[in-house]
Image (tube, helix red, strand yellow):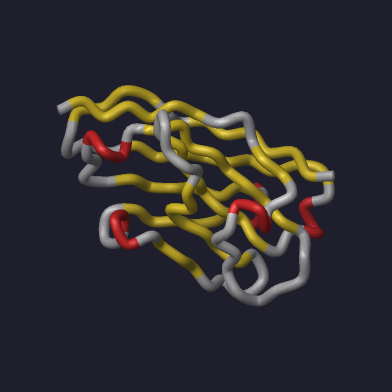
Length: 126
């Protein structure tokens, strides 16, 4: 089992920045993929960024490319999502997810993840 705890959400004005953190515990040695998803009211949960813990490959959804950066601290078993130039449409609950199935690519489908954090609210005001 892997436990994930997100932090760092909040209210920010458009154009501002936030950094989300996701601390993993438990069987962290089994993790292959860590992803950041978001879900706005009435919308599907979507992957905005992901990183393969073994290969270091990353993925970004088109609408966040150039604004969001995913990074990791292996020693702390923590993955971060730096979000810059935030827009009102970035408002959502953000979830961290982890998966332990062998792959060297980045998994972007929510069904591909076995472990989820509780979510953290990000609200961007205009």
